Amino acid sequence: METPQPLQTARDWTDGHVERWLPVLPDLDPDIEGAVTRAKVLTDHLRKVSARSLAQFDLHKHEYDTLHSLAGRGGHAVPSELAADLKMAPASITGRLDALERRGYVRRTPSAEDRRRVDVELTEEGRATWLGAMGVVGHEEYRLLGTLTAAERHTLSDLLRRVLVVAEE
Image (cartoon, rainbow, N blue to C red):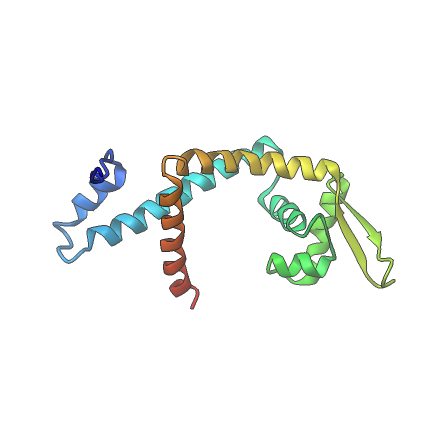
């Protein structure tokens, strides 16, 4: 059986960043600084890709977030559910839904169960726009993480979970 070889990787911008800071901060853990800096650089990169995608589909981030929340609920929700998903006051969601309805992305109808309630539905046009914008970012995520094996992606996800569980405490 062949012994696995150490992973040979190309240098990135963060390698130089860490090397510059080590003489200034001798107690700096290069692995912690490298991991945190790389996470920030990756997040910034994906944020830029997302912004370009939203512009391509003529969406504002808050519109995309609302469509995404609605799609995540199977394309049907009540405004209070969307507000909770988006961590907004329930009254604040009305303006978003007004704008999305004018664009033909959502439809509001009186609830069949409760006359005081309105149901929100994602339209086909809204779903297509949401999927298009999401697809651009998803493609980039797969392109980047596709450089890892399935086992490496699983390990990375598990390691990040452990870190985030502490951050969420």
